[in-house]
Amino acid sequence: MIRSEILKEIAPILNPHLVVCNIGLPSQELHMIDDNERNFYMLGTMGLSSSIGFGLALAQDKPVISIDGDGSVLTNLGTLPTIANNATGNYTLLIIDNGSYGSTGDQPTYAGMKTNLTDVARACGCDTVIEVQDKDLGPVLKSAIDSDEMTIIVCKCDSGNIKLPVITLDPVVIRHRFMEAVKA
Amino acid sequence: MNIDKKIVDDLVANDVSFVTTVPCKQLAGVIEEVENREDIFHIPSNKEDEGMGLCAGAFMGGKRPAIIMQNTAIGVTINTLATLTQFYRMPLPMIISYRGELREPVACQVEMAVHTKALLAQMNIPTYHFHWQKDVEEFDNILKYTFMCNKPVAILTDANFWGGYGDQ
Image (cartoon, rainbow over all chains, first blue to last red):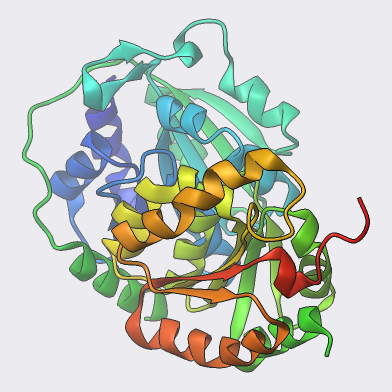
């Protein structure tokens, strides 16, 4: 499965929850599949999906899911020790690991070579790290969200993209409606 | 006057309850004060752009955030300031150790100091420079201004403000 197929499959699981979605194609795909006010689309700042989602999870009690990619986590690798050492049970980090920089033309990442992000997350001190194959993600994600334990999911999948338009929503609108959803 | 206590008192008085820090020798006292306050959740960051991401999330979660860092961080956070904090219009007080200014003992620090105000000006970031201890009196108003206008705001604090480095 490629990332857009995974997002289509897990969209009903994500729908009731606060989701911070990675820059580029992941946000565009989620926007096309199930746009709603509980989604925060990153329009810039590659690498910070995990940090933004984690800050949000620390600041309030609702479950938060950060959708990240292997390339983006490698960009902000310092995020994993921060998350590990300040764990909060309402946070789930979903790393969609297709071994490539999808939004820029599928150039290979080091996570697709010798670097194992599951091992990296564990070495950084994350207590619950689950590596899962794309087709098995749904139930794993659901139980991670439902559990009181912070979970890092590394979902292995194929690289590949679909053609779709950029998000034209104004960033302040994205932020405002998201904050209203947080308060609701 | 205890500057560290005054700065953190003002943060608390302005409902700032989420503070991320990247350390600096000059900021050690204020970071310790942040860590010791029950009204503030202190989360150290490994890099300043990561910290700005945490602050963005905390703000959307209903908390008022702040970041404490060195001016060298301006060099690594321009993209985050532009495409996250400014693009989504989020408030962020940045309490910045202004290394490389008067009484600085380390020559390399000057290399970023000479760019610091120019970069902040280029970014249209409101910037305040604390050089004398009495300048801290403005901090409360700067915090109110930051959360009024939903912008990142820089407070540069130099070695003279912190009382120098002692004998080196």
